[in-house]
Amino acid sequence: VFVGSTGEYACDLLTRASPERSSVIEQFTIAWRKPGTVPRVERVYAIRPPPALSERFARHLAAVGNERRRFHGTGATCDFAVDLNRAPCNSRGCALCSILGHGFLRAHAGSGPNASNRAALRYGPGLYFSSTSGKSNDYATHSERLRGSRRWRTMFVATVAAGRAYCTHEAELDVTRPPDGYDSIVGEVGANLNFDELVVYNEAAALPRFLLVYSSAR
Image 1 (tube, rainbow, N blue to C red):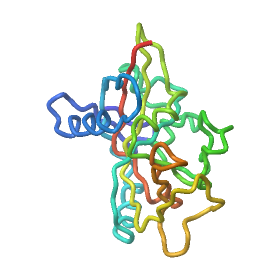
Image 2 (cartoon, rainbow, N blue to C red):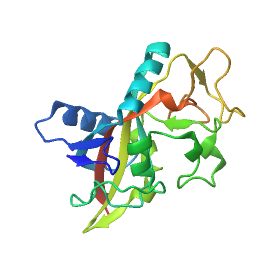
Image 3 (spheres, helix red, strand yellow):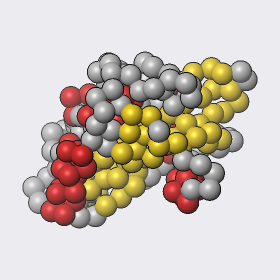
Image 4 (tube, rainbow, N blue to C red):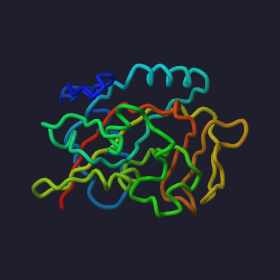
């Protein structure tokens, strides 16, 4: 068990006998949906978020419903999870540990490796998730570490309260929130999108549940 620097959250390394571990790995593998070899999952951590974040999410989910399990790629400045001897850091500049301790923050929207790409925030400044692990991998490049002959990365699995989703095939929408009467925006696969996106605009609508550590050949 790794406990965060504030003591409010913890990460449990799941064993191979864990049904949760098997379920998350299966979802990651099936949902890769990109050409080439699917990366190998090395470790799965179950996240116990700060109680205040869990309670906030539970209230929001009760209000809007439609819980989904989705992937989220991000960067890291420390080696936690990739290096078994490293604990989570307390740097707000470390996206991975910031999410562990504070949840997903809209203030960081668009700050990842694709920040210069207009399509990175195609539906405005929200919190972006996908059912396609291969897509979320595109946003995990800053978590990459080279270990031997393999490239190691990390990725979150989150529970998201999507509520009533506004579904679109548009490439972009100039918005800062969902249309009236909706709780989220879903970009659907079609002429403009190769892979789906689920966007929520309320920080209470998403909670980190698992952290995947995976590797691919160099």
